[in-house]
Length: 150
Image (cartoon, rainbow, N blue to C red; front, top):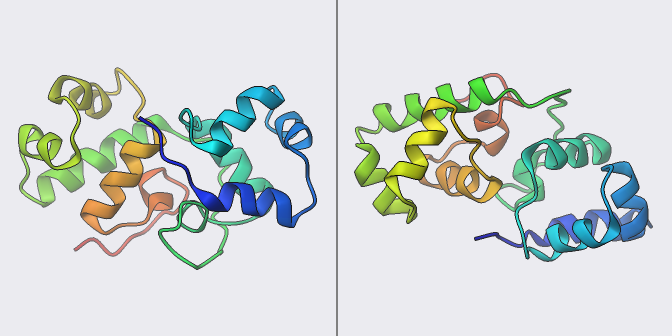
């Protein structure tokens, strides 16, 4: 599953960049980039981070979670931060892994791998978690250090 985020295309077009130019910036092919932009496959976390840094904007803005373009520059995504934060939020909201997985419609075995660091959660899962927990996607991904946790 992937989600199309309209602002990915909008940011590129508004800055007069072609898909080929954007692909070069992200060190990929135009065909692969086009699939990310159209939502046909998941935009890898390291690449969406480079994209956000390039356009000096937040992931929350890119994904439509916010209209705030504030940039939380992050040189590299740290998977340990992601795993720690998603586990802490799940426990703070008193969700078992099973209950959480039912809410966001993924398999518990898959989600367990995200919390233990055996696998990296895709952008769409982090997007769903940020909506469920009402927190910033930039926070979940370690681009933003502090967050008011409800």
